Image (cartoon, rainbow, N blue to C red; front, side, top):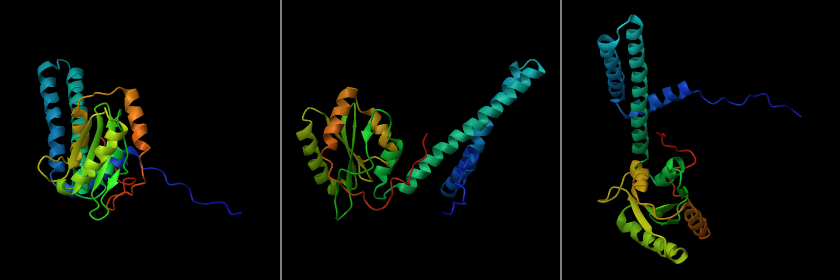
Length: 231
């Protein structure tokens, strides 16, 4: 029996990942370099000023300058991460299945959801996703309101039938008035007021999962391969 000769490919290191993120973001955001330079220079200049004013000894001056440099590097990385996240959402905007990709990659602790939609319009490929947390059940519609309203109403009736006393909220992701963008999903979820305990969240989620009917993922984005940059 022949033995495999190839070695498993090593995952790229942290520095390589940062370089890749920088190059990918720069292709979309032409101002990335300038924002990073500005974020780096401000802490460095502050460190130099403090070194001159309160440094005192030579060692004190060096420490303030070094601290400013480290703070500048950290600030530049934070700026790159934020703008990379924005660029990732911009590339996904308007694609079918984008909401599922965001839920899979960034849904915060305390929420239970899935990249698989609970309802899909087979003709338009509009979809409705569901997340369960302390605020109750949140239905997230992907598509124009006029095309997704019927799907949302049907899912609301299903939730009310299974969990009649649980609040049901609706978020719409799209370009319509009153809709939110992909990058605002988690922020919108956390703004909802909590009304359920953790045990109740688990119980409601288990009840709703029993209604799953194997709804296919909309074509467009593969949620298993698309991961927005985490903060």
